[in-house]
Length: 258
View 1 (tube, rainbow, N blue to C red):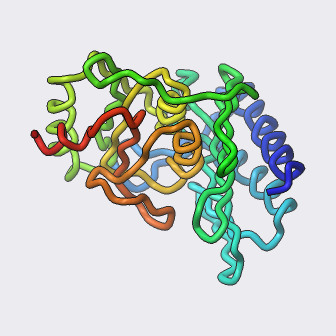
View 2: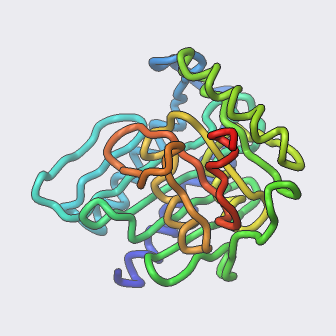
């Protein structure tokens, strides 16, 4: 991928990050989406609109998939952008300052560029396929800790009532082994924290492609592993379960209760 394109993607992400950082909460508009406690704000829509314009200027024929709809689909294009304008919208709506912007570029449905930006901490995570993962320009790697000394980011399937029991069952299994648990309310931030060695495991029973597309490449380029909860390769065209790890042991044995 041309360095100029990657540079401009990062510039576009940082630019919209400033919109999030400087949001006027007196003008905040919130609408409900399908699922429990699933919302979008006028800033989600604004950020996605600006990103779509910037990204399609770089690759005009690319497919564009964003959380807030309005997909542009050229069936013969080999490139696709997958965008989450504000991952952690509930956090953003409550001014919790735990949200991120995520942009993935796929070629033939394989991520080749991943950019994730936390505007509150000014942390920009990036990866290009085969060239490593970086945080603000510094190479990053997953940790080498075993689960007994590790931190787990646990999903609770908040939008899907039918998945809550299994999610809690898996949490209980990991709780018997892990050092501690966290939940930030942004899968992008949590996955990037796996990539840079701040935690060891993340799981969620149902995520959309924009929740993990960019971060999945960052984790893999940092030496980690990301699969479905059943150990299968993840796809980027439909919802899926996710388990992301630092790849130091067989974490699936805990899920199976072995």
